[in-house]
Length: 97
Image (cartoon, rainbow, N blue to C red; front, side):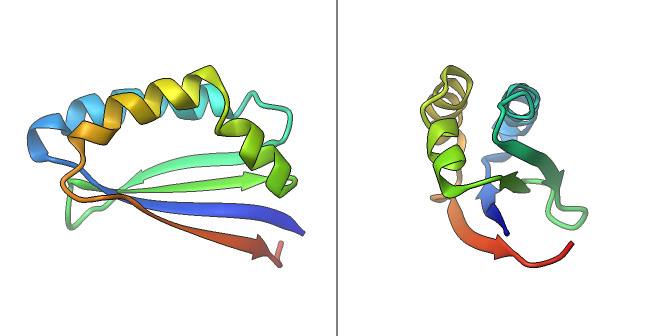
């Protein structure tokens, strides 16, 4: 099975573009991690300040390693003050494909 993390983030409208730029950078670096299988950043079509991250890792340990990387810590510290409310995350075991 694959370990998946989904995160929903609502950002303040005036920080939307900066959030997108920071998240693209984080995603690009994350995809290069050996344990990362997928890292997607999506924006709601109905609520443009709502974003969804879909992250897939080989193991939970790979996700923990991701949270120690320079690019993740840079992203986390940058975007935390831009959030309209605390982000919510859910962890999953992917069954298919």
